[in-house]
Length: 210
Ligand code: GAR
Image (cartoon, rainbow, N blue to C red; front, top):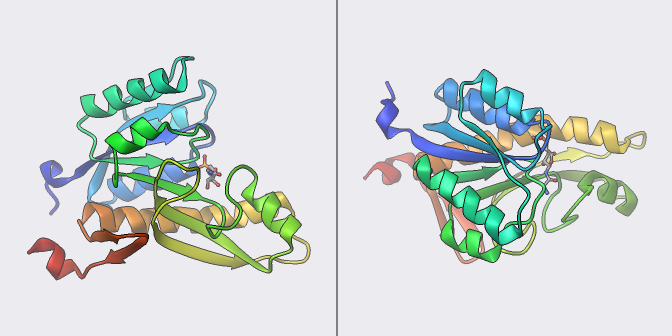
């Protein structure tokens, strides 16, 4: 049995629908990830992700309008209040300041709907279709100050079909994102991730415990 005290407190930053948040909430509740969502912070008062947080009984905060520096200081204060040890960007559509990334170095994760380093930024699915790639996917990575950059933990792929639209591609990617994010967070919460330069290694479970 996993004791509550040994669960890593996670903070999740959202802006929209929150399906990745839901996958993280479910994986924690089911004991798949040895973590617990300690708080959810949104940049958007209308985000459906807020309903998900409330339904799960998790403290939920909407960020005030502020400068990026003020906003990120506010996020850090909330994360510290909840003793957060890992910060998950889950469809969070604001660029974090370098100061924030520095404070939480090697403890911030992002999910992106492309095979990074291809198609950074907004509308990754549209970019993939425009580029004519036949395979795309999703990436979970540690966050660095530049957008959608940082050591890659895990990726998953899907074919791009001739009749795909931005929407069909996005819908097919989401379940892949959920599985990939949950797996990466499972490794993190089990202390199994090691970063060397740009590469991330998953160490055997037995080694992590010793
Ligand atoms: C997901 O596809 C996520 O990868 C993407 O926003 C969507 C959020 O969905 N994030 C980015 O593009 C970040 N660069 P969700 O709110 O249902 O989790």
